Image 1 (cartoon, rainbow, N blue to C red):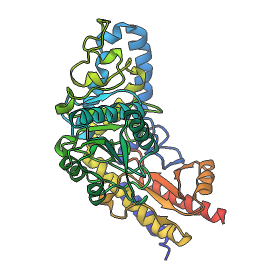
Image 2 (image 1 turned 90 degrees about the vertical axis):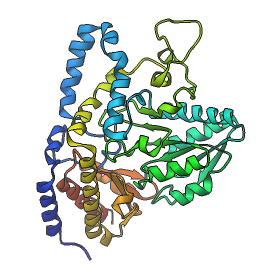
Image 3 (image 1 turned 30 degrees about the horizontal axis):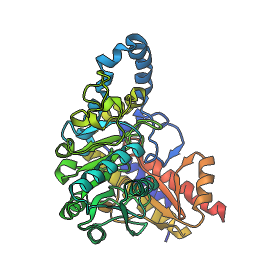
Image 4 (image 1 turned 45 degrees about the vertical axis):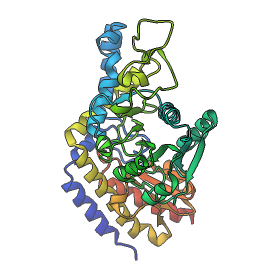
Length: 414
């Protein structure tokens, strides 16, 4: 039975009025417009302060200091910003997180480094475990690295409306497992994996585990050090609002840093960057996982969201995220379920990250129609309309407005 619209609207208004993070919405460009943004888990809105920061950087630092900027600040930015992400969002002590290349390149470096280290220590460890429904980049990289290094891929068959759980992982790992690649939040369903339990299962099998944090960093609290995590990679253009193509971060637990040799040997990862010596000698610490010149302009935008995150606190962000998705599920049950829409994400908020997927055969056409009307969700096969609710920039009223628009589009599609 469809829930009366008025009751949902009253609930949304009350939730907004009681939301301790409501004022943060004003910090983002475009939040004041009628546009409904359901894709903050793909590309976050820019903070208003970022425009001023970028302009000031061009005129004062780049334009004023020129090449002196490298000695004065820029060389250390990958580590300074990396440590800040580690502290605010990852539960990582200093000296273990760095900003580097794209997500793809960092995943390649760390998977390859972990596989080589494990296989060198034990030649029988030649298997990489990965979920069949992980993000395409993860799966493609694992296949490529396995072919490159003579390794074998072990696929974990998963329910596309969930993700890898303890039983599935336990059945997949063993004495031949070198590396396990896991998504903390599944890109399709939003399923939230148990980081502590799955890391322990991988370690019991003697494997290293690499966490893909792309859909959780900045939205879901993590405790990488407490989990005993080995490695992690995540992007910064989603909930960290770094901008289109902003560089990813890599986490390498301190105990592994000297053991791992990353395969893309560039001058920025050398022990003495400016010696220009005839041979490559890797630096100590996280510098050894860099390759080329740091992308300074692409790094500085995310600092404004980190300021907001430091002020709000990741625990409060998670509470808002949970409240948003719980409200979205209730509203979808009332507005969209009578139209044949089905929730294709975990119903329990404790098993869900910051986004959810709604399934209906018409969703591809519905998504195209919504984009024309300034309602911006994402589409994922099969038949999934994915809504990402960024806690600092999304309101409950905006969420309800967007779900009403989905219902209208479904009716228009017949």
